[in-house]
Image (cartoon, rainbow, N blue to C red; front, top):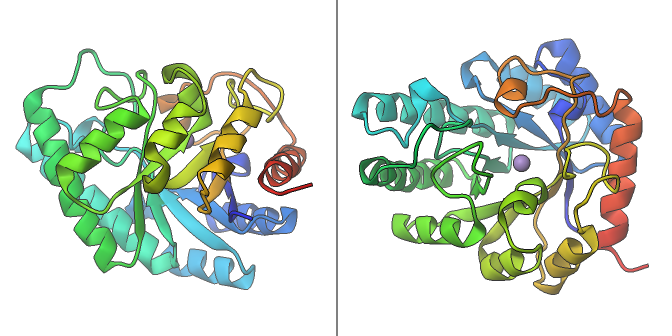
Length: 283
Ligand code: MN
């Protein structure tokens, strides 16, 4: 079966030692293979503490982030792009130091709503920055994937096919990350995008249409998991869910997490694990 992961925001909104310990121990206890840690502020991550907790619990890790207005590599302003590359370099360093296997997320854009479409100059900065990032990630031994997200969270690309075209432009070895929550908003169905990126798919987020309990929203998970298995995808599959019960100071606001969709992190994670495992194995 694919390695199964759980997003840290299921457990904790910050990465202090007690929060990291709780998130890592809980993720391991449920049976997941790895945890995805949001490192929007890489400099704030205690890498020695994180690595030690991961090793102590036999848990793998992926790191994810999105950029902000001040570090947006899709900006027309070279100074903003330079700050964005500094942020990404710091993220590569953190991911490498904690022993993560994957660097994923909206690494090519601000995470949030834009007032207009991307410009040609902005897109050129994305291509240049992702080509540069691919080299950094490869040198650090990290698998790099760019997440396809919906129109309210980036204006760079919003579909799997457009992400493929962007990656092709970089000429670099970069994977595609799909997310059922975003696919539900932007794609025509849950099968065509998976087939379109099949041999470039390197990371998969599983989230419901409202980002709460799996199986209680409108997403056709049978179609999605069917396609994922049919194309022979063997990479990581990570449960991602957000509720106002667990809040990250920046990320939760960028993602418009205003509602309480759950309070019991353990029950949520256990349900998600069973839901995903049962659909990825024969039974
Ligand atoms: Mn996602």
